[in-house]
Length: 166
Image 1 (cartoon, one colour):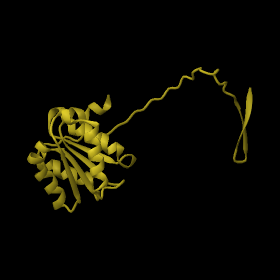
Image 2 (cartoon, rainbow, N blue to C red):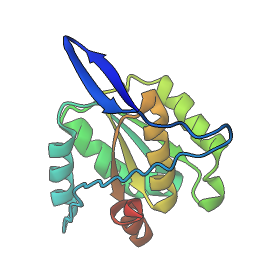
Image 3 (spheres, rainbow, N blue to C red):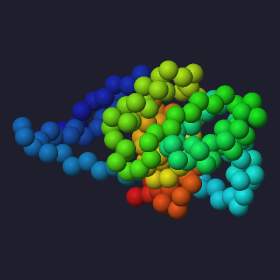
Image 4 (cartoon, rainbow, N blue to C red):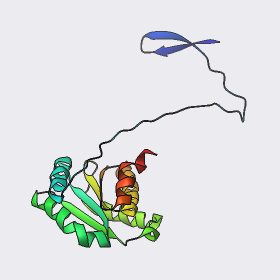
């Protein structure tokens, strides 16, 4: 049966949608397609140059693990700070067993104590565990802040570059 719908100064006639009986169902479909760049670099210098371009004026919260912090944080954090970027860093214990909701909540609590805001960036530096957890934390903090994955392992590269597509 046609129904009149008022919007602004216009009157539209549309077909009414019959509601299902109580307990009935309405079939809905949704489809989503996302795209994002995967940048491949060939040297630490090229990586830092590209990272600085992507960071721009944002403050950066680095999420890493204790092992990676010792190996790569001096290079990454040092390059960011040398370029005048304000950096905060948190290192979680390494390993899959530390990919927990409790650990993610600790990271969220840590972020709330920083100056990182909605227009800033979470940088995940590490392997699959750090990338998985850091991405979830970034999506939860302030209803979602931008994040960038800087993988340091092959599994991290697959998680960061391909795993998000499936």
